[in-house]
Length: 113
Image (tube, rainbow, N blue to C red; front, side):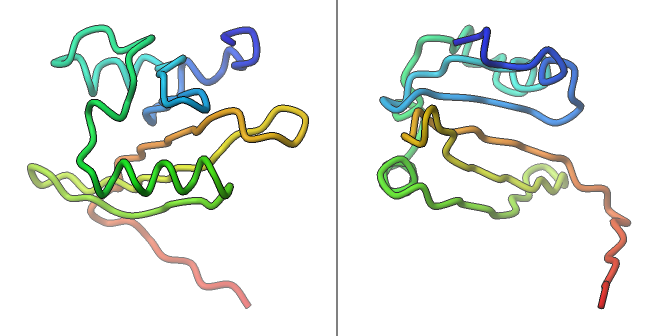
């Protein structure tokens, strides 16, 4: 699996967490490992163990349909954009990628026509 992950994903400033189609975590970049360090090494663990039933249902839906899920979360005064999207091999859903991006307080909105 890790041979499919480009090297640049490791050094991104946002957290990148990747699971397979069964929900097993197969990759966490440095930022993701720092974010979830309190849980220990999560590689090989099933992400469903760390999510509530509503979140589990949403993840199962994404893995079954290929739909994306994007939302903002605010915790301890920090706002993050979370984007979850299935990834594919030969057109078949192989798992899900989650990007967690810290949004600056003064984030600019650019409206293009």
